[in-house]
Length: 616
Image (tube, rainbow, N blue to C red; front, side, top):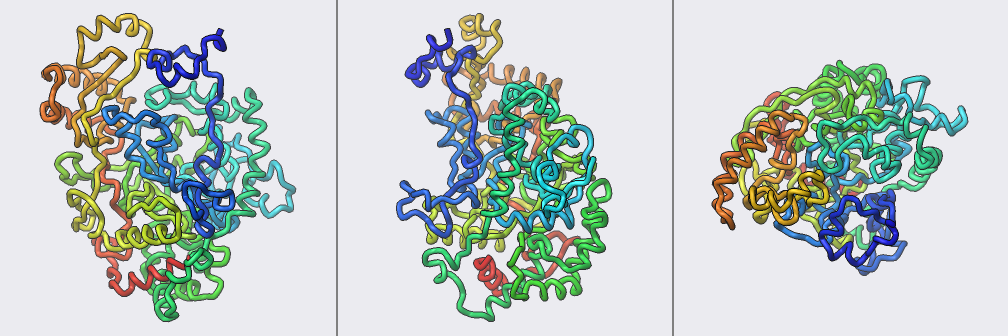
């Protein structure tokens, strides 16, 4: 019957057909890893970016030119709020919790994968985590490799792992294979079970853990994939090599010929950058500041504060200078410590460290460690009112949230724009060395000179200084639409009556909330915490009452006047009230707060540092 009913032409042309919740599609939706990780080769770019050859592709830098709105919106309609939501994901960024939603709009840059061997080594020094509950069920490299293998040093039964932290919030902390296996579930593996634990795209109060034990018992897909994951790890171990500007076509012309300038840049790097962006550190760093190979758990902030204080000392800078100036500094260096940096210090957008999918009892509970779940709160941060721009304090929750792991700086010349969401700097789409360098120069300039950042309004930092910033806003009047096909049957049966009774809520095609005025902060709506059921019901009633005041065919200005009264209620149930997307990372500038104050770098030092960064 399903086969007879399938009509591929109607699927793209007949709204009542493709929105039928009972329609059986003759295919299985899933994605390959390369969907998010393969991109143009930085050192062998295509001569025609529209027609690359296989030799022009690379599995290391990530899908830097992946535009989610162009891929997932086949018929773009600017009046659809989902189109406005997808537009907040800039090229190369994707919300990995888009389907298994935690109700936070969280587009993050797709990770480059470089120097896996050194990454595992820094995990052995600072990546010790403790497993408990379903986390113990994760497969480990020891399950597949002989005891004498160097890759068998990252697990001690039954519950200790030394692990790299792949997600930007450092949540996937159960071992390298567990991090990989979680990705396969997130792109379609055993979806029959996965989608029982959340409401796709919406999330909500019914989110429960996806259990590894259940997958292993019930899914041949899971078991087959789990056996092959070690091969994926070995592939990256062998292939994930840096892409150097010096080997790219014409790349040498961008490098300084002045050895003195390069040495000066290395010294600046040693004093200001290496404490987060080098896996090679003084022996004292590993021996004294993070006991038990990471200090992960309730006491982590004490260890971090002691470490951070020491990295500002002349002793640390002198020791680090020797390491950076050594000929082999870049050899087997992951260019990240993988330590978790408190967002209260980093000041980048807090939505990523506020993600909840890996906290206790949520969808990825089995893929985060017990030690992650015991991390202490980082304290208060400054956020800004989404319409007035006024700053106010926000207390970060604990339970694992509040931290960001430093990205690797390997091949940083090729990976701009910057920050965890690709929102700092100009985007150039061709993948050519010329365009990559143009994006690098613009992005690194805005990182080191925050006053150059773009924005329609200035926002305050913890230092009290201000710089321009961006809040993602709707570009057109828009509507939140849910087709009748995806509403409960009793509402579908009453569709005609509801359209006449509540024209501001139901249309001919389904639920339709709006108009949402242009200029509305997108995350004011996308980050509604549906687990606050009582508050959300009250908010929904207030929205209905407010929108009754609107006449048919209301103007944008009329909608804006009604919507203005709803902002305090929307903000009260917002799961991430940090709306400025291009803020943070003020190290080496005059924007650090008094408690962290260091002399800002001179323009000459910044320019020398940029010359060194080009060589990474």
